Length: 156
Image (cartoon, rainbow, N blue to C red; front, side, top):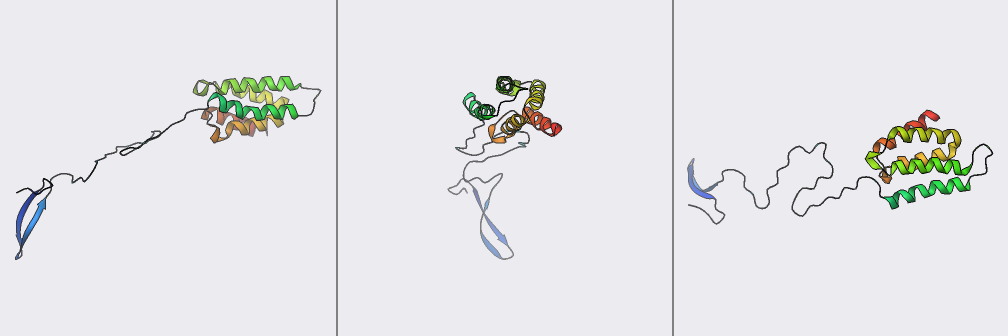
């Protein structure tokens, strides 16, 4: 005989006790059944009814502009140096900014070269640039962040 949940009910007699029992074959689910296999190496996993995930990869142009505007302000507020013009420093930073904007298509070797040039011209601006690039909240491509950190450590 079946009960209202569609389960099979059966009578039992065990050691002098009698009664009804439910026989459930397979999973007894009262709602959604969610099975999850290995998710290692995945990004942004949402599990369950109504679950959502938003993945933001990289930095959009506006955010990148805001990050680099701080660097350009530092360049402008820097005292005059007879050995290097502010425009030359800005050009190096602009090259870095443009390459970083390429996201995962950026060439880390180019960024490394420009950061080294920047280190030779203006170590103070290198520090500000590396701090901006390596900040995880900035969402800059990991390979570029690692190169920036490497250059900073080697220059010291």
